Image (cartoon, rainbow, N blue to C red; front, side, top):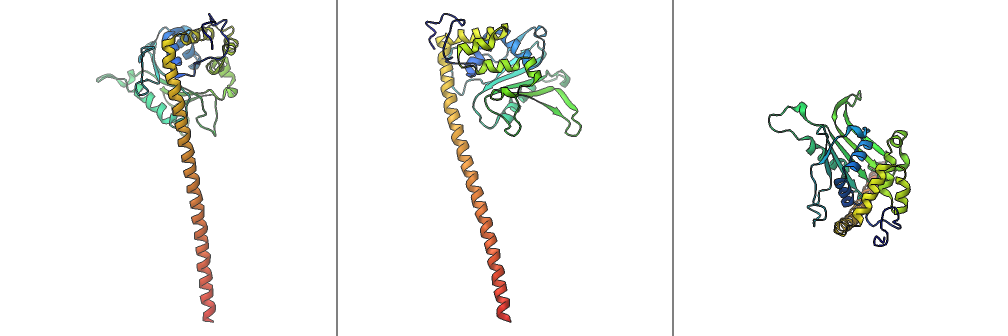
Length: 286
C-alpha cells in the first residue's frame, strides 16, 4: 500500500496493510467513531439506529501508546444508552477456548451491581465475537445467538444475558434476516483485503463508507500503524503456536488410539491363547 501517493480513501489502491480484522485497528476505529459503533451494534442486535442515543466505551485505550501483549485489552466494553452493556471482540486465532472465554467476559460485565443494589436493576449484557474460524465444526452458522433457556421447553430464562458469534469464514451461510440487517456486508467489509474491494462493498451505504474512511485514516497514522503492526506480529506467533499445539494434541490422540487398539488386539490374542490352552488341557485328559 502506498498511502503517500493515495491522498484519500476514494483513490486508494492495492492491499490494505492493516484491515478491520487487526484487533488494534478494529478497536481504534470503534473507539474513534461513535457513529460507526452505533451502526454496527444496531445491525448486530437488530436495533433501530435512532434508538441508540449514546454509546460509551468503558475500557478505552490510549491510541498509539506503546502496549505489551499482556496489557492490551482485547474486548471492547460498551455502555449503550446506559441501558445495556455490550462486549465486542475481534478474534482471528482459534485458541480452542472461545466458548469459555466469551462466557467469562460476559459474566464479568454481568457482575456489575454494587452492594445494596437490587438484582432486578442489573443491566442486560450481550457478548459479540467476530471469529475468523468456525466455533462448532459440526454446526457451522454465520451469525449465531445463544441464550439461557429451559432445556425441555425452550422457555427463556432471562433476556438479560446472550452471546452472539459471527463467523467471518462462513458469510455464505448468511440468512435472509442477516442480509436484511446487512450483517453480511459488515462481515465482508471486515474481510476485505484491498481498497478497491472495500469501496465496492461499502458502496451506497453511509455507515460502511464512514467505517472504510476511518480505516484509511488510521492506516495513514504512523503511530497507530506501529501498534497495529505489533498486534499483527503477536497474532501471527500466537496462531503458529496454537497450530503447533493442535498438531501435537492430535498426534497424542492418534498415538493413544493406536495404543488402545493394539492393547485390544493383544487382549483378544491372550483370550484366544487361553482358550486354546484350556482346549489342549482337556484333550490331554482324554
